[in-house]
Image (cartoon, rainbow, N blue to C red; front, side):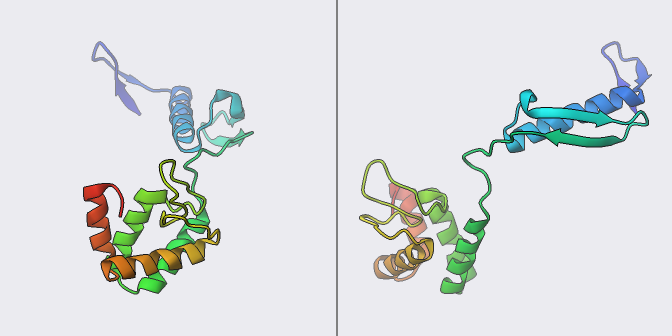
Length: 158
């Protein structure tokens, strides 16, 4: 691999410097995705021929925005209930803005709760919350999630 240094002379990156660069980039990527720091890295084992043998990480703490696979199930359920791709995309965006699809979400400024952030929501089952949210959209916006999303963009709620 070739690189140009500050004096514009071309030099060859040795295998070791290439490995160091690779490890630094890998650590930067892992740090950005997993929110880890150098203390969480237990060991990097590198073979002399430049192959990274293993990276052993300890105590990886998930971040607040860690991926939750159940959210995909909630979205799939919503899509099945709506049956319309355009409406589905609008509702997904709307509820991402409202609660980030967190069925435990609570609004600090009102009694809105759950995925659809309905006022006085007492339901804790995310699927029933979705049903209630779709029922609300049907009642207020005649089932048009895109109208609800447009209203949200204009007023900050729906």
